[in-house]
Amino acid sequence: MTKQDYYQILGISKSANDREIKKSYKRLAIKYHPDRNQGDKNAEKKFKEIKEAYEILINPEKRTAYDQYGHSAFKQGNSNSSFEHHFGNSADFNDIFGDVFGDIFGNHQTSRSRRGSDLQYNIELELEEAVRGINKEILIPKLQKCLACHGSGSHLGKQPKKCYSCQGSGQIHIRQGFFSVQQTCSNCQGKGEVITHPCMSCKGNGRVQSSKKIAIKIPAGIDTNDKIKLKNEGEAGKNGAASGDLYIQISVKKHHIFERQENNLYCEVPINFSMAALGGNIEVPTLDGKIKLKIPSETQSGKLFRIKGRGVNSIRTRRVGDLLCRVIVETPVKLNEKQKELLRELGNSLNQQKKVTNNPKSKRFFDGVKKFFDNLTK
Picture 1 (cartoon, one colour):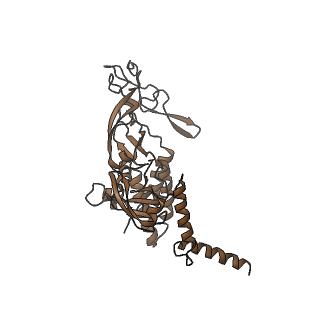
Picture 2 (cartoon, one colour):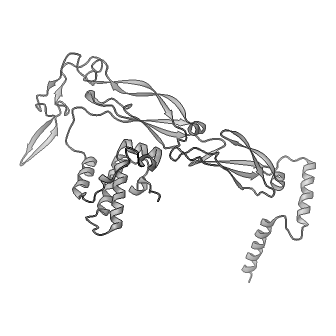
Picture 3 (tube, helix red, strand yellow):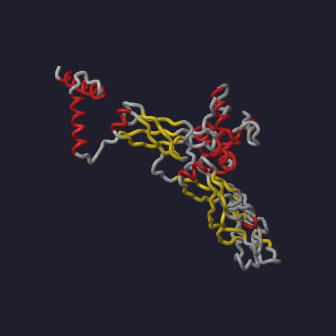
C-alpha cells in the first residue's frame, strides 16, 4: 500500500517553514487526538499519520532525506526507519500545546552560546547537468569563527567577566505590583558575561565576515525545488557555538528542446506532410545522442511516441523515465510552382473521392456541423 505524502498529510507546501509545519500539526493533532475521538479507529490512524509526518518534517536532517529520497529513506534497515515509539496513544494535549506553542511563541530561556544561522544558496543548472549530475564549486559569503580569538570574542589570554547587572544569570527580574517579570539582561544580552578586552580582529563579536569556497556534488536526477544540505557550512555560532547548515536550492533552466515532467522528457518533432501520410524513419534527439524512430503511415499531427528508458533516472526510486516525442505535421511554406501544382492535383484527387475515405476526421466534423444546423431549423 502506497504511503501518503507527508506534506499532503499536514496540508502544507514543500516550501513550508518550521512555524507553518508546527501550526498545521497542532491544528490537526487536536482535531484527531484519540482523547477527543474515543473508539474512532480512523481518527486514531489519522493521528498516527499526522504525528509521523510532523516528526519527519520538523527535523532538518530527516526532512532533507525525505525530500531527496521519499519514504524509501526510512525503510527497514535505515537508521531512521523505526518511528513506532513516537506514536503512542498516551500523548496528551499538554504535549501538543507545550511542544508546539513553546516553539511558535518562543520561550524565555536563553543560551550563552547560540548555534549559527542556516544559509541558503540558490544554484541554477542546465537540464543536462541536473540529469547526469555534476560537481560544482561555489563561493559563500558568511560569518565565520574568528581565528584570532577562536570565537570567544575576547583578546587572547583575557577572560570575560561575570555581568554585574544579572550576576551571571543572563536574566533580570522586574517586580510590577504583585507580579515579577523576567527579562533578558540588556547589559550582557543574556550571555551572563561581559567582554572587557574585546578581540581586535572581530571587535568582540567572535565572528568575522568572509567568503568560503565550497565544493558540492550535485546528484544525478535532481530537479527544481530539490535541496541539498551541507552540515555545519552555515554561519558560525556565537561564543564558539556550532555552525548552522547550508542548503543548496536547485533550479533547472528551461531547455530549448526538452521539457521535463517528473522523470519523463518531452519534445516536439516536426515531420513533413508526405512523411506523415506515407510513413518512414526519422532521427529524434535524446540526451545521449540521436536515435531512429519509425513513423507509421497515416500518422496524425500530435501523435505521441514513447521511447522507453530515455528519460531521467529518478533520484528517489532509481527508476528511469521515458522520452515522449510528439510529432507535429508541418505545413510547407515557400512552395515553387511545380510543388503547388502537385498539391493542387492531390487536392483535386481527394475532393473527387465520393466516399471521402481519405479524410475521415473532416467527414465526421462536417457531418456533425450539418446535423447541428439541421437540428436548429427543426
